[in-house]
Image (cartoon, rainbow, N blue to C red; front, side):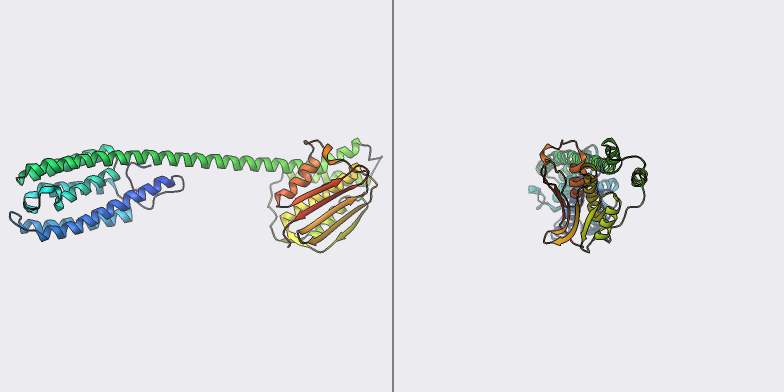
Length: 392
């Protein structure tokens, strides 16, 4: 935190909230102390004017000190406590201490309870709280020396020694407390900044992982799926459908390198999106039962691509199977079902590194707050149920 407690203007709190709070405290409290001491001390001073107090010195002196106290509080609260303000406060107090013989009646000087004694203590404490130790400690010593000199000149060496000792103790204790608070709060702010840095790094890393997973899903559902079909011998000779599929895969690859505008979240017809998905697989004979339904664009993208991944699995692993694609509204929200009468499989035997179910379907649905349920058994076909809890 800064060496002086309060820079001009409101304290910065974005990267040092604890330091900003300390600056505010070490500005407000000294301002209120100085204002209270000035106003009450002036009233007390005027109430006791026994000789040798000189009214010709006392009245303008009290007026000056009261005016200074009001100005100090105003500047501190509005603009912060600057080094010049601290130096001026110490100077004014030191002069008042030297004028003790003509400002304080001898009867009220003993006992460290005179208004000048309170003024000196307030200045010492404020200086330690609002200035670095290399300036505040000499300032405290200056006030101590001038008070002792003034009290000695007023003919009270006992008061000079007693309150000088009090001022020294106040200087030492307040300086140590301020140093400890600044050091501890500095550590807190550094820990906060480090936490912010690590949080940003984690968010960037998570975004990178999410982008990588999305690319892997897109590659799995397009290029890798097409290559799998070729490897399994599903493509025989020249095929218009195969050429169209390769063209669509190529467009997907190009889109992965294109950072364009992001689609808005306005509602789009999910039933229309699913018809388009089914149309991307002309080799698949699917029965469609799609109820009209609108969802946010991002949700439609996730459900559509998850459905495409499910239908592509049928093309790759169950060619010739009968497929039903349903869209409906239920109590749980939007439900999409992809069911086929193919050979089926055992979900427990799918290796964990395979993207087909884990990312292309489960992962996509999780990104929009939905879920996927895959049920299959060998010889009993496969049913994939996609659920999203909100209805557009």
